[in-house]
Image (cartoon, rainbow, N blue to C red; front, side, top):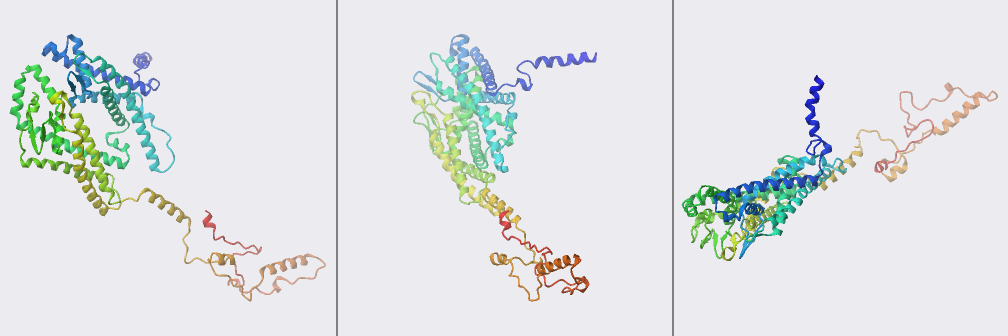
Length: 550
């Protein structure tokens, strides 16, 4: 009975293990197959969410706004999916490039979850190299880091390649008489977003969040972290500026909402749309703090130096814009924020990777400013774009102006703070010597360990005269006048013993009748120059150059 119950309990597991989604090692799929399945799952889940929202808007709004019937609803959902990846559209008389960056959260989250599943499904943790090249611990660490980065890149490509191909199909499906998606932008945007999300998910699978940046070497890691700190400070300041503007001009925002009169469901969708455009507004606030500002159409400008506006689109969020005219003098104080962000970033750069050379720290701080400016320029390009033709063909900040301003402001402040912080760290604690110096010190220490330290109280034995002449290790031994030739004495004694054994040979004198040796048994013999010599007549000489051959 017990055996029957055990079979019934283990039967479902045995049956499920035969299907492809089992957890056995034999059923693990290759990485490209897992990436393709993850891409299909992401696309299906995202379209399902957007189709549901579009269907709710189709029910609440006029039917003609989303096309004819349910096929028009599905095409609109496909267009929203492309817009979530920041792929633009062509419309009669212009193009639409001002897309909500908040909508990118949906595919980014789905791609991240799909990347985690792909990494677990393909057992990427077990694909780390078991054999690493021999060398120093630093060489082994660099080899492991390169292998991890290569694995992360392979996983990102495995997810991004099929995801971009599916985006091409969605672009063809989303076409209608009014909007024409740009196929090239759709392919590139889907490829970049999927690669970034898949790479981050794979790195997260290999190690915890704290060790993800450890995949980078120390110097690039310091610049990356410093750039992230500077951009985060600027974005936080932009967020505070936007929220303060909404609170101050809340009456105008509410008036524009009443003009639209969207109704209950339409009001919820309008509030959702404004929330999705909030990230664009935060980047515009960053551009305002940096100095160049942004535009709401050609010939307009919103900057700390002044505001020049004309008719703006009827969007409640735009009601937070300031009035046209000269800005107060105290508004210019916001330009100090990029310098503060640069000062903080410079300290972070030096804290992560200090340098023993004083002139190198400001250069790395300025490099952090260059990367911060490039990042701010990319964000400015993503946050703006045309909204049709004619006057609304230029909406948002200028990417190159924002990049140049942030580079100079953050770079100069980061260079100064990095130099001061590095000088303070050098004065407080000694820095570790560079790798070549450490290697040379290890070699010298190893060679010095082979040489014996001379003992002051050691007994110096006389050596060969060539040793004294060539190496100058000890003086030439002096032969005394009363020195007895031990070799000749040993030879004579040997012959005397032979003669004494012959019967016809005369009696050799006994040992007791021999003359006593110089010195007594308790006193050392003075007639022996080399005390290491034995009775056999062999002298052992020490080679003074033997230490050099070890």
